[in-house]
Amino acid sequence: RFTADNLNKAKNLCSRSIGEKMKVASRRAGASGAGGQKGRTPGSWLLAEARLLLRERKPSGRTSRCGGAQDLEALTAETLSSLSVSQIKQVRLLVDEAIGRTDGERLRLEAERFEHLREIGNLLHPSVPISNDEDADNKVERTWGDCCVQKKYSHVDLVVMIDGFDGEKGAVVAGSRGYFLKGPLVFLEQALINYALRMLHAKSYSMLYTPFFMRKEVMQEVAQLSQFDEELYKVIGKGSEKSEDSSIDEKYLIATSEQPIAAFLRDEWLKPEDLPIRTPASPPASGRRDTRGIFRVHQFEKIEQFVYASPHDGKSWQMFEEMIGTAEEFYQSLGIPYRIVNIVSGESAVPVRRSGGLLERWAPGSS
Image 1 (cartoon, rainbow, N blue to C red):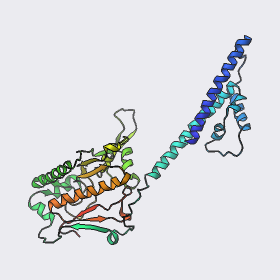
Image 2 (image 1 turned 90 degrees about the horizontal axis):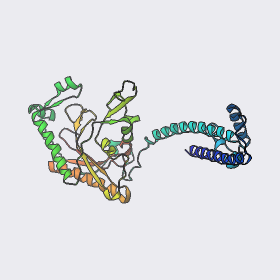
Image 3 (image 1 turned 90 degrees about the vertical axis):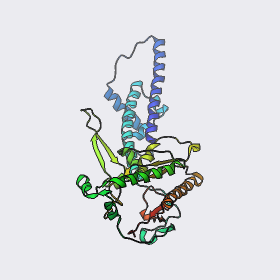
Image 4 (image 1 turned 180 degrees about the vertical axis):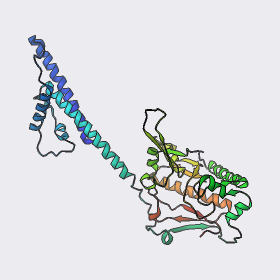
């Protein structure tokens, strides 16, 4: 970009020099009553002569950055003063060529830079345990509720007993781990969703329902596609309905509503007085698979808390603790035991600064 800026300055200098020389020539022609030029030098000769003159006037000690651009960057009014208008026009053509090459190289380097920047994670909070062993070094911050086991039936048995789940037909229709919710479980799921949304609405959250798919160029700004491209579901279609359009449009199925919410205010300026902006969302999400039942399947519903907060004066951390408190309030109201865990650094996702607010609910039969 530095080279491109210098080349644009050189081009402007050429244009000014041409203008000045044309004015001088016009005044002289008017004074002498002479006409125009009696002959023209072939452009190829002028171009070769311009290259030679530039090499003769090249300052010593400069190294090439982009195919001869260093000669053109060094152009000065003094250098151009000894050239004719035709020669300066040829020099300007050389500058245009160098600008084209430099812009191409700049775009390549910027794309390479952005690819590397996407792999750089946030700095971790000092409280995060530095380790790769989550079983040994995850730090339990606090617990709530009594985890007493009085197991008679598994959750799989219970949902089948009330005719609320059909995994066999789900597998036929959607493949492995597909399922249908039926009857009472449909109402139970909707009741839990509405209960959570009402709780968040009372805490000044603005309701938001997100798209299920995101364009690739937007998704890669909120997710590490180089790491998860093979794990995310995506659809590939034509760029447009035009028959002559051969471009490809890639869209990714969101893994969490955090992704489209993060892009909701993309490229917008947020005023400090408008923060924090609290936003919940409730789209289907995708996740890892469990061994049986409907704990962690291909698709499930969840309510996300998402807040745009200022990073200054610890305000984002205050907001983080508030969100954890809201999640605890929700589980306590349902009487579900849980623990708050600070996840080790080796298991933290790249964008995460602190996973110290992971709430793990307890369920009979879980370890």
